[in-house]
Image 1: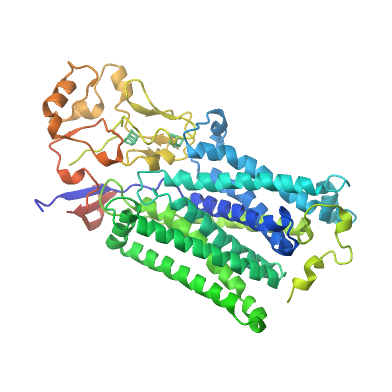
Image 2: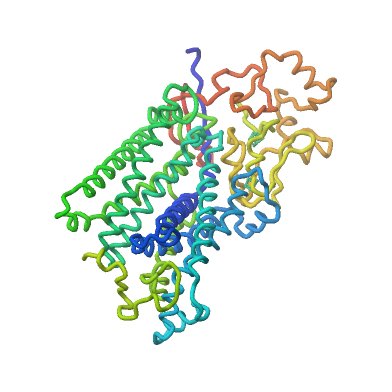
Length: 393
Length: 161
Ligand code: SF4
Ligand code: SF4
């Protein structure tokens, strides 16, 4: 090495705020829960109906909150209409701004169709609940099954557009080598499904459904998603382990040079392995102990949500602290205000409010695959035991 | 000291990502931002490999070095060129073969360097006599985490190579 040089590296602020993490997290939960609702709702598998009910609640609420977080990440949110006045087909963000509203409308219409028969059954309910049900159900005619399938298929198609654009938007950025890999978009999707299955496990417990069928289905989905995530991560690593530039090289350099990145990598790896092991244990445990084992599913659900959120935090926030043009890492402390903690808490608060509001006014537990009021069992309006045989305490 | 400014890349990665076409390359090659159209999504800030862009706190839109386009239009030199006492900065019309810049580029062709050439951005800011370790991201050890200016404002981090 020749003479030493001294560098004064300016501190560069991050450009995308934690709002971006919130958006990517919410929208991933949204598209993944849509696919988990689809077996019953769109493809007519009645065994999946209890899962679909929880999944649809999760899907609609995350779909409503995600665009709020996205808008908040703009420094000029009131100019959002520029996206439509000056669309640029070269930009994935612009493509996304066209797909997202269609997708949101699709999810809203699909939820409405699925909940409509139950709303109609509640038209005579006393008080505000009945009023809302009358108002929301828009008349008595039955909901054609074909319409549910049609809207469902359309929305599923749009959701693949969301998966594609959210992944590509980040992965095309050559300036940040850690992002610039084809393995990033599939990893977003895989971790999205891990988190979505986790969310349904948690909701299954919190909403008092405690369905064993739901637990089993979601644990299986989570196992599959963990496997896919492991494969994707492995391929990414093998793909680039011998390259001296690119995403893997940048990751290895970060892990080598920074204690924080070392602990992040360790934490991520450990959590993934522990989650996978625990899910496998629950699924393969003896049938006699299943109810006891499955009762702990919600804990794994929380771990899975943590995995989905942390992955997005590391990818979107931590990567922005890796200096690209000067040496080292920029320090980033999460600010307390709306571009930091307040934004994160606010998004989750808004989400909780959306769930509670829907729980209050919409008989989502009775969601069907279409049809008329008569399909809703009037005997047990609060606990429609369509899948009674599958439900345990 | 290595002055780093917008390279006004011939193939600027900051331009195609803009969702509202608020940033563009002018006929003369200068890359500018239309701050009335910019929505402040900061996509371009992330897409520039040179940290040349930032969100202007006052306007809440993307901002960067413009080669002082407003001064060029008035027939003046960019402020940094005009004020450099060593006369180290030279700007000119590269498309005019007779200009000083074109003659210098021809003369020093082999010694000229650009930053991060592997990113294929074709920078239009050339460095003559630069320490080669700056061409890519320097690999250096931090020695001081915060360096303050005389007013106590943080200027950045110090590294030693
Ligand atoms: S240096 Fe950065 S901001 Fe300037 S033209 Fe190149 S990519 Fe764009
Ligand atoms: S910050 Fe402004 S100029 Fe940059 S990509 Fe977004 S809209 Fe375009």
